[in-house]
Image (cartoon, rainbow, N blue to C red; front, side, top):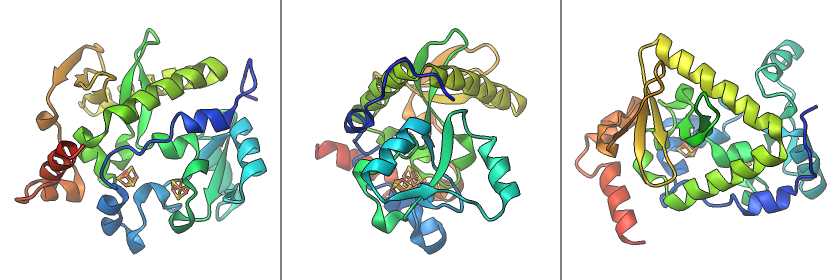
Length: 243
Ligand code: SF4
Ligand code: SF4
């Protein structure tokens, strides 16, 4: 059981973390490259959402959107359950056409990002799950992530860390393992801070260097899209101008 010093009001937490990642509908960007047009992060074949045990209690009391994920076999279920943070359960929703935005889990709202903590435990920004970089359009278009979203991400995770202290420890360990993984393959970690900046983190020294969004790589099919005349970058700039 995960430690929690106070009861968690998930309704309030959800209300404070309700904005989309971007002003563009990113599901329309990644869906066409996935089977049946399903946005990648809503495709149960690719990604299984998890919920904190108290969050799962809240969801069950409010909506029929979710059920426990059962997997295709007990072995698959056991093996994936071991990968999630302690105190969380794997769940499955009714699918993207029946999504209820107000009942998306914290993991739905945060994807493709996790809170990045350096080795002294400072929560310095958002880093992305590299396993999805060839499938998630946002990862190839980090400049499209709105400042308002990043601010809600920061406030929500700070609140979660305070209420659910094990979560902070889990992300501290997870950030360390992502640094080790990046060091092993000779890569750096891309990081969005909470003041509009983008950085790369040296996974060995943890030195943080500011870069520009143009310096970032793009991946998979989105690399090709970026080379087109009216690229996503142009669309993002147009969209930002209209704000
Ligand atoms: S967050 Fe990534 S995977 Fe999810 S809908 Fe947006 S682009 Fe697709
Ligand atoms: S609840 Fe909505 S955002 Fe979350 S996985 Fe289901 S369809 Fe996607």
